[in-house]
Image (cartoon, rainbow, N blue to C red; front, side, top):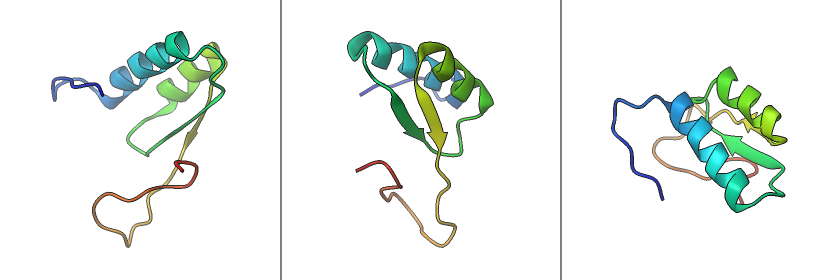
Length: 71
């Protein structure tokens, strides 16, 4: 679990988490993120050899729910 200041952007957090994941799990190859993450996170993942896929949330669903690939 990572707790950050609310002022930290999702992109900055995503990049930091990808770095941590790669250091902890060197063979990681795929990561799914929600639409709050942008191109910078996808590009950073590619540099690390991680395929980052942005998964759209179903607009009719409220609150937390498991998205494609998260299971």
